[in-house]
Length: 214
Length: 261
Image (cartoon, rainbow over all chains, first blue to last red; front, side, top):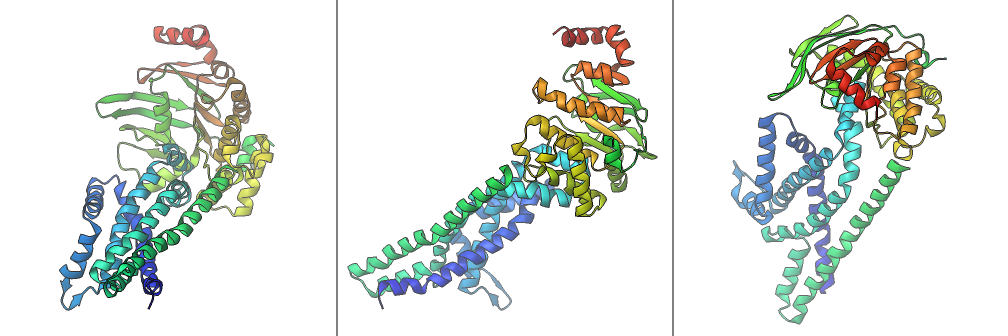
């Protein structure tokens, strides 16, 4: 088997890890972001503690803790499960911080106008604050997603057969100059994969700009 | 049709509002000191005074954007005591009765002018989209901005945005309108379009409370002039009488500063 085919074998797993963790993060970060700006001190501090704890520890440590440190009855994480949960929880923490920043950058007058009109808090959040915050944070979310794509390679350390894992396997079998080839290829592949994200983010941003200021 | 007829479908039920012993402090800092004000149905009250006097804060206490620490608010058979727990029904009733226009317009930038006016009607009054859109278009026409219906606020001038904001508030059929320095962010010339709309609304008999530095508007349009300084009302009465013969030294100093500019 040539180096390129070897690396490509890991592509589906890289995509699965990245998109699963991203999906968990995108959804899970919503309640956490609300908690981070809650007027309730206890709730706010608890959310803050969670975010700082998750972000303060390297992802590789979280993956090892989940993979080897958790056993409830007969339940243990398999490598893929541990990687998805680990990357997902880290994504929740980072994205929650991004959401919070976005929500806080919406001018206070928007909230006041919604209150004065008698809109409910739920309507205000979903129809007034979120659409404005989303426009502000969408570039940051795209940046996070490309980062997450690359961070998914850390799953190779707990034996998840994604692209870097496959590159290493190939390199081990070819201890010559050829062994460096899969790493070159995998590097290029990460760049190629991140291009559509950057493109999507830019076109989305342009479209929203147009929608707001047209 | 007049503005308030359009806003209400028929002539507005005239509602007044009565505020008693309103006080508000931020920490140790007193911002409203035991202020009482009775606004008769269908009258215009102009609230003037030096900055920092508490005018805007007091106005924002009326619809509870600011929560007073004590006092009572009576409007439309509802009595609200902001110092105590306010139930959601009373708050909703208060906000439905009272419309507000802000210095910085606060239109929703991601919605067209039409949607800014139509969307709250659907959410707050449960109107159908067709009905709300129709009402929005009527109001836009009345404030001279029908051609801006499908523009976003970012494409409108400040004066246009403020007129859209007035239409947005009127669309919910308020019986009382609060104006918080509605022309202060506008060029003098542009401010005139907004004042013209407000004048018309006053002529229709809308109950209005207006925080303003527009002395001519206060003199010509308001029925009652209220002067605030140092967190309290220091003088109130007929606008012409106060402006020509203020009883309080503090009022005299303030009027001299604004009128002899």
